[in-house]
Image (tube, rainbow, N blue to C red; front, side, top):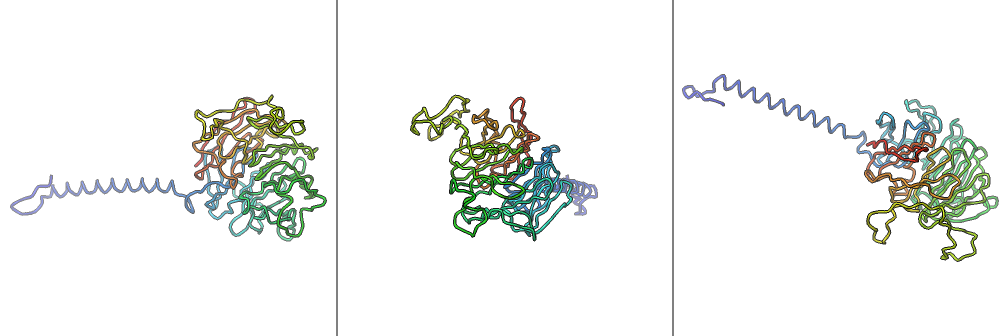
Length: 420
C-alpha cells in the first residue's frame, strides 16, 4: 500500500517503486490484450472487405482445388485437401470462375474485362481482353473458348478471331430471367450444351439459324446440343418449362435436365430427337403415350419409386416430403454413370443413374450451413468433379463452401469440410 511520510509530506521511495511496478504490469497486460484482439480481428478480416456469397464455383478434375467468384468481387482458390484458401483478387467478375478439365488451370475475368487462364501456382498461361462474361468455358487444349453475354448470346474465340455462335434474340436473358446460361462441355465427343429457359418449343434449327438479326425472343434459350468444333447446333432438347438447368455427361453420351416446373428429362446424344422423362419423386413416371386422361392414375408408372424422406411435421400445405422436383441445378458425380439433382430451396438431393428414369437414393446435405440452392441466380455455385467424386456447394448466407465426397460403391455422400 502507498504510505505517506507525514513529516516530509512526500511518498517514500519504496511506495513509489511499488506503484511503478503495478503500473508497468497493468500496461503490459493491456498491451498483450490489444495484440491478441488485433490478431483476432486481422484473422477475421478479408482483403477488400467481407467475403460475399459464392456466385460461381469450379472444381478441378482431380478434386484437389476449387475456384470461386463471389458477390463481393473476390476470387478465391480453395485447397480442398489442405483445408485452406487463398484470396487471389478482390477485383473479379463475379460470374467468371471456371476450372478447365484435366488441368491445374482455371478461367477468370477481372473488372477491367481481362480474361486469364491461370494455374493454381499463379502462372498466367493466356490472357486477353473480352466483353464482360456471364459464364464461359474452355477446353483442355485451350483452343476452344465460348462465352455468354448478358443477353445469353454466345461467342467463340476472342480478339480478332471472335465469332458469334448464338445471337438470335434479346429475351430471355440473364437480366430478364435471373439465371446464367449454363454451358457444359464433353471433349470426348466434341459436344457442348447450353441451357437457360424455355420460351419456344420445337423450332426447326435449319429454318431458324442461331445467328440472326436481333429479335425479341430467342429460339435457342432452351437446352441445345452443339458441335464443339463446327459450332453448329445439333438438336433442340425440348420439353422443359420456365428456368431450366441442363448438363452433358463427361463422355458426351447423356444430357440431363431439370426445371422450375419440376420436369426432369434426359436424352441419349446418339438419338437426341427422342426424349425420356425422369420420374417424379412421389408422383411416378408420366406415360406420355398412355391412352388415359392426365388425371387418371393409370397414366403414371409408380413401380420404380423409392420412399421419400419425410419431415417430422407437415408444412403449411400439409406436405411432409423434404425433397422437391423443382430443380435448381444438376451435376454428374460419378464419371458419366450417376448424377445429382438439386431441389430449389432444399438441402436434400436425389441421385440418378444416367439413362435410368428412377431416383436411386436421397442425400441430406445438411442445413448448417444451408447449401446455395435457394437462388437460380447462383445455380452455378454448385459444382462437382465427376472424376474424383467431389461435390462443392456455396452457402446460402455467407461466403464459405462445403465439400462432400461421394462413394460409388457404398452410395454414400459424406461432408468432408466446411471452408469459411
